[in-house]
Image (tube, rainbow, N blue to C red; front, side, top):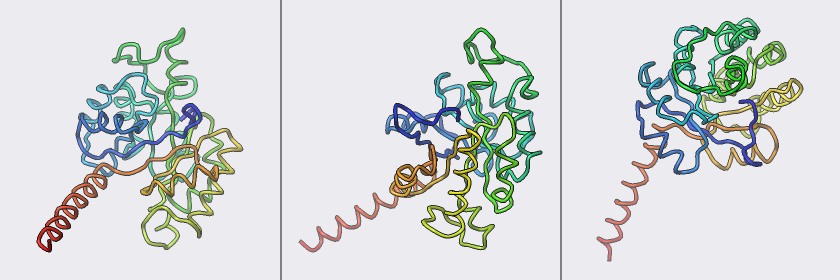
Length: 256
């Protein structure tokens, strides 16, 4: 993520794990700014993810994909289909970060192969320079080892952003696997990563499950953007709320 602010507002993305072309449209209509297609944990395969990316507007700066590994082959296909950011999970070293940058960036910054399969994907005098400006290399830090090595990771040339995975990070500290920590080592890690990313001109994002928590992070200046919710969780909540409302209405009706 090159530039987090959207007219003074912090971007809000969501995680998509289902193979649905409709989901990004509904999310955009609701006010989300973009999507993180999850090829690491979700049901999404490479073919489906590439199709979804091609269905999104080329100018959507927040069409991201989280990959399962640093294998450059699927990363290349996702980028050629229009991904504007690649999130690499569990980054814990400079060498991993360098591999991410190499896969995401065109020479001389990286080793990405030139294959403009989507027309006018990067408009500009130099297609490769425009592509390197348009596409973000995003290292996901989600372990204590990653936090401890934050300086060597964040200082890697070509890295654009760090994305925090709070649940896995909590587990690495011996805590329950959940997010939205208000205190303790996870919160301290967020503050530390904010300091390091700011020093190197790299943006910082995090996954959050609660809007109130995300607003607090923005207000405290701790992050530049958030991934707010996962499609499966949001659908599960909607199903639960709907049935709970029905049951409540039935109960009220039976007592009237």
